[in-house]
Amino acid sequence: MASRYYQILGVDEKASLGAIKKAYRSKAKILHPDVNKAADAHDQFVLLNEAYEYLENVKTGKIFHSSSTRRRRKPQKKATRSQTFANEEDWKNAQREKARRRAKAYAKMKFEEFQKTEAYQTTNALGLLMGLVIDVFIVAMAICIISICLYFFSGIVGMLLGLGILASSGIHKNSTYTSVNNNFKNAKAALELLSDTKIPLILFLAFLNIILMWTITLQSLWIFSHLFFFYILLANMVVFLFWPTEKPEKQNEALWMIGYIPGAINLFFFLNFVFSSNPSLESHKYKHGGWLIELDDDAYYEYRWLRLYPTFTEADDNNRVQFEFEEGLFGYRVLKDAQFHPY
Image (cartoon, rainbow, N blue to C red; front, side, top):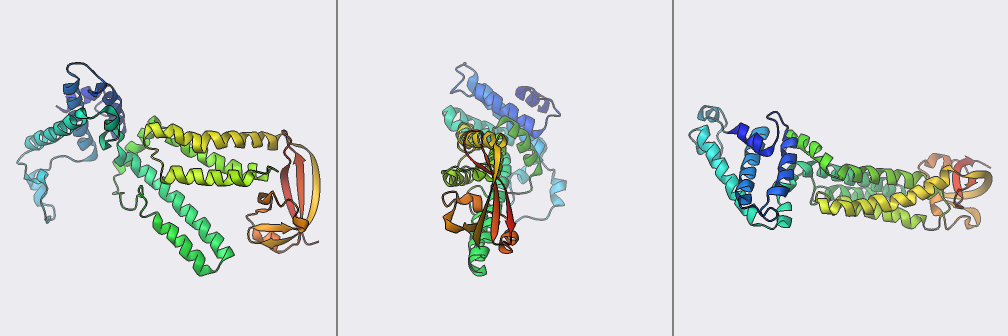
């Protein structure tokens, strides 16, 4: 029977769980009765689901255990149904019947509704990795906020704000703190499934745009640089915390929000920065406050990001800064270097 199930899905008997999930999704798109108008489409779809669920159980270890194996286990408060079967064949028949019932319910759905089901999305696997990425993103934000608040405010306020962000990561809808169950086989399958999605591209472009924005775009004399900064911050928060990127139809929208649109702006300023010329030096006295330095006579007041520096020690120990500007390729001046001096 097992070999027949592999044939139905069109995969080798040594196929991984990820390959099985890919094959199921591919064939489900073709065989779902809402899409396939063939007379036997319903039966083929039911059989596909039966094969998929059986092989998924085999690959994840959800198989029948004999009574002798059960006696060696610790007694449970409530016996599961699988423990009541006398032999493996009865268990297999019960699992096939469950799969058929679910498949019949899926077959009655519109294909758009079926795409939202866990069986099609395989969210147990994909959601695990997405949840981990989201949690890391939230924790990183919390660390940044703690650092900022500790610098600007009292230590207690900074810690409370940061800890509040950390706590929220445990209750957001995709958090892995309540859903991860050490199912490493599903996690491995998720990695394989990612090749069928645009999620890796979304993550790569988001990271690339943040780096380019911070190192290139914000160092250009562009009046809207602060708005661009907040757009990238907000768009990334929306996509990673609220946008259902596991749904294929939403992935293109996410790509435009945090990939293509900011990418086009960053590319413009990257070319402007790289192909700049005619260097010039300017020296300004300043006062250091927080992450910003206040230049005398409010010089470059409208370009505040030029005065944001990650190292406070240099600014604290000096009172004058020398800027090195160049003329950008597209006419926007760029800051190439900043040196601090005591006089």
